Amino acid sequence: MTTDTAALAPGQQELLITRTFDAPRDLVWQAFTQAEHLAHWWGPKGFAIEVAALDVSPGGVFHYCMRAGNGMAMWGKFVYREVQAPERIVFTNSFSDEAGNTTRAPFNANWPLEVLNTWTFSEADGKTTLTLRGIPFNASEIEHAIFVAGFDSMRMGFGGTLDQLATYLALQQTG
Image 1 (cartoon, rainbow, N blue to C red):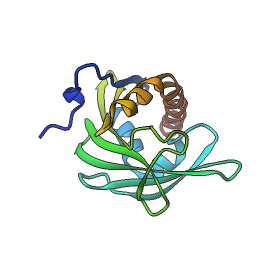
Image 2: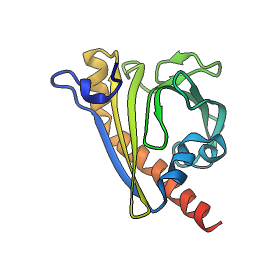
Image 3: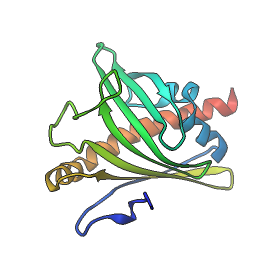
């Protein structure tokens, strides 16, 4: 069974973000798969990340809390479906509660409960290109429309997160 985003229904759109980092793929892979790295860069700018659990294997979970400076907390989780180190990760992403139960997004009750993500990592000339693809998983037409309407916001959010990753990777290489 394929878990790739190639199974888009007619008329569905996927979120697509591509970013190249001035770092080798093995280091970028580690930044995405090891708690000690994720805690330094994952999440929106201005948020502290607490890694509650991380098991990057099929069926494993990344359960985390994003905490704002004012103390507001949002929990999230990835459930890994496919891991091909250091080339590809497929997972569903959702909001969750502190216990890891899947919950609705706090900002919109019609946001998809789960998003299927396929992240690929390719290397050329010592640089790594990350390609992120996301589509609502088992979602209604309304949920899919809300997801598509959020593309600009998600691109901005991922942009800030990936900026933090670029800074972190540069520090790792000079540190």
